[in-house]
Length: 106
Length: 476
Image (tube, rainbow over all chains, first blue to last red; front, side, top):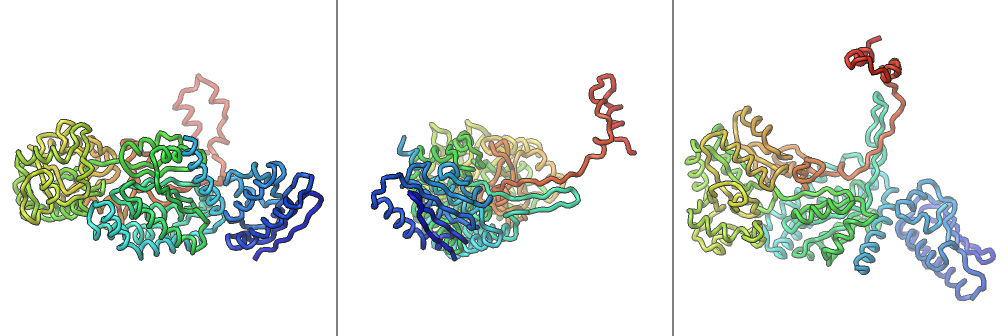
């Protein structure tokens, strides 16, 4: 199972994940993430959108989740997307995929 | 060109993301995927063999079934208990721990002669080592390769494999193939096929394990059981109508036993062409301008060859043999011809027979495979020491012997290393362990000689080598 919640602060959408982001779980949350991002864009905020994925307590990421990250990052400027609090193993996963810098993984 | 590069980028992006997910799987999860793919491939062995034969018009479907069995059951038997994830070896005495890391995306080039079996084999060894695969099918076998990949991929996904762990490029142009081979995100090309393609893989700037052509001589020694030898050679050369690159190309015998060997081949339904027929065979089997085998003849039965060459052969002929006058470019029938044809050489004595085998071995087949039938250990040893071949197959069919698992204990493989002679890094039968980066954790185990030795001695040129070494290796 995956625990997933969402909050906003100013112009930043914060997504918090906990657990295993395998293929099935990633697909289950994919639409919801897209909707939150879509809502912000439609609301026509003046400030540029920032998206933060907090993966502090995530111990597995499937390629489906990596694709969610790529898609979300494409909605904003490169500097305005970040993956925060990754474990060393998850950091390595994004390095292997060649996406650690593009997705601002820390 | 931009489009090609974009396509290569897209394919490799999927593959590296798959590699990233794969990295997180443990041995148990990995083995579950491999077992699932093995079972699916094995269950479809007949369907895929028939499809391959129909689409390519090469070989014999029943033999392709057996190749699929080799590539699944035998390969799986070899690798299923192998440790390929995490710590794979711990030598406490030496203080060395070995850890297996995957390589990353692997590009699998598939030959038209063995399309389904080569895919099954390469996919199994790649998944066992947590590496995603991109399959490049031959133009004449795209449909059956697509079906094979589909079967493997669905089985892999059902067992929890990462998405895109197996991809296929359906319309692989030469440009796209080269773009993938040279892509920065590719880890390795596993190239099985013609010399040009293998050379392209090696020239790409990325690591490659490539296996090119062979030109397998088989020497029947005086000490051999002649009927047994002939029976085995026929079984090997007729297997899938001679499509395996490890199949015998030339039989070499001494004059002393040549009559017996010829009679035995004839007795076992093989046909020796006369001088006129030999010329016709030469004109048909070899493309004159290129000096290489006519692609149309690959994996064809003897009657097909006879009809096309315009010669009469007895009904039920298993193999056509001819006696070229020598070995080399000017004698085209001495080259590799992957069909139901064998060159036959009668030599004056043992020494000239071995020299003929050397000539054949070096004519496009260096490093690949050689075969011998003998019951004298001395002869087997002499032959083995002088041949330059990754596999010297003894008293066994060369095709089925070289691929391992049936007639010997070699690793079962559809990719046979040919050493530096074949521009390969290894002479081994390629298997899962070749697809790992093994990293070694080295605990402190001091070299007592080094730490006892006065290192200042190394800077003193007046001390001679023997004295230095004696001091260094002193037993305290």
